[in-house]
Image (cartoon, rainbow, N blue to C red; front, side, top):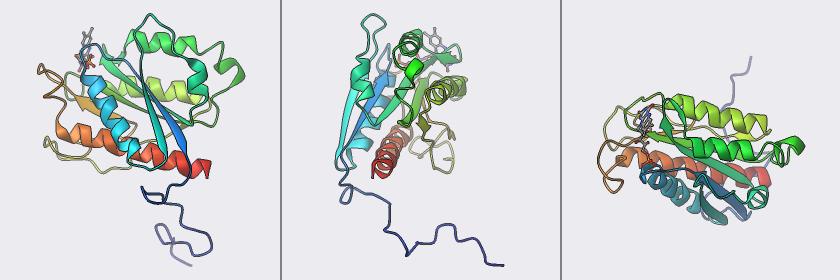
Length: 210
Ligand SMILES: Cc1cc2nc3c(=O)[nH]c(=O)nc-3n(C[C@H](O)[C@H](O)[C@H](O)COP(=O)(O)O)c2cc1C
């Protein structure tokens, strides 16, 4: 019996891994986020930074304010949508929920976002803080829309501030802010993880478009 060939290069088709030099497929990624005090916004900016490292990726940051409606046509024109929210009471914030519900009639009823790439991130005050509740809600929303969820392909960090995947999550980015202002927290490891997710979404989106 032949051993599995996971990870071996295939010679019968061109390599599909894309990097900054080789991504010739232009893609558009929208990052829709909520943030009351700026910590989740900082995470969003690092997700954007990672995505922009992949040449040809156009990134737009859209903050939901709970009053104005998000331009759903702009999102429909995107190849990928990344969702970000603080965790409040173990779930996502109401502004994000309001945005989710605003898509049901105009978007979900015709499955207009089916096939788009999706991913998510959250920030909360404590290390766990039940952040998973937020990420699960984001992923379920994407699933109901027929979107393709991108997770984190990372081993867990050991909890040190600079560790990639410091808090050991896989469904999306988990970040932690304490009482310090957003200039000081979340720690570098969480921001690094956010950049990683941005790059991974951009690479995956370009591969799917190619
Ligand atoms: C109403 C409320 C509920 C909260 N619930 C949680 C929680 O369940 N878990 C947690 O770790 N932090 C919780 N926090 C802390 C927030 O998650 C944290 O302040 C927030 O992520 C900061 O993000 P922002 O600066 O983007 O608003 C809560 C804060 C508020 C105001």
